[in-house]
Image 1 (spheres, rainbow, N blue to C red):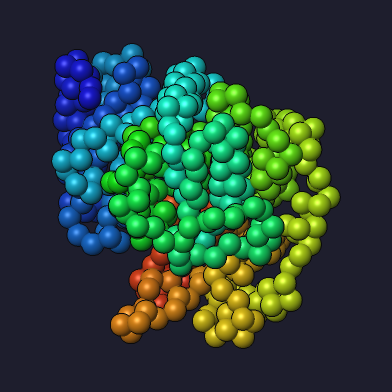
Image 2: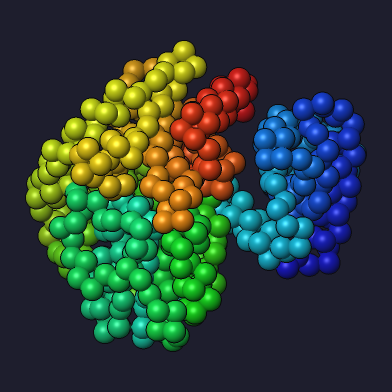
Length: 458
Ligand SMILES: [Mn+2]
């Protein structure tokens, strides 16, 4: 909780920003109330929490109007409060006015987003790493879980952590929520004993290690059981918008993959990187960096690649297993995806979808769609690619919300779009669920991408 001085600073800032918002007189704003401000102690940034009267669409429009006005508001505050340093403002929708704890978490997250130049970030990360290492060292029994519809980093991190913690003499269980399947490409990793449903009572006395999960809901329908029964809850991830749902959190948005963060933990614990562990980590690294091609391919990621090869990874074997074992059904599904692809926004946005019939035709499931979207983003001129996966009806006849993946080349922040529909992810790769039809979702994506394209670059 902020101290007395920061509470006063926050309140003064809140009043000044509220006055500033009123003075803007922007009709796009709607009925905005500034509910709280949380400034960083050095005043380098401040998170502004607002509530907006009206539906989700109105909310999104208001937040965008505020983002647009941040420069005006910042100079107004500097002028009025005679500040030497004007905090960088970020606007957040305040879902529940009383979640003070969560606000604190958000502010810590803001800190971690400051970037690699910030000594503060490094200190925070070092402290968080030490806390995770301590928590795992103290744990005898660790329940490891990853996100629904897992990718290579999720599965690789899960199997690497299981092997490393077992090598330290700990009891380990691994879990993947039952609706998801493991993609064929990474199914060669050792997942023996992987649990698909869990008796909540069996979790007492177990530490939860959640890997690569941007928020708790990605653990699947039983997430509340996992979070309430396990103790402590450790959240290790590299999604910059991670909700920090753990009691102990290690979130490094600049890391290429969760695998990259895990190595720091293993080193802290003194776990040896065996060839088996190295292979799992390498699968996470090579898939999340797009075979060392995405923007996330930092010197650290490449150095880790070298270290893992030194530890015994057979690079060519992983290549053949992960990238050259495409199932014929997946190729046919790619054909359908290409057929359904429609360009919008002068070709800068390309959206396709996979129907239930498409999946039935190729005898595939959700996991069969993994990676298909990359073919859409690869098209010349495309800034954003979207792939909508139609979901199966539930037993009671209702239909689960359709799922959507978004990929960006970097100009458009797709995690901001995903968050409008309770999803999340990275700026260049994000996902969400949406209750609307495939056509509704196409319209939603087109409108949000158009809005971002229309905004002047920050
Ligand atoms: Mn990942």
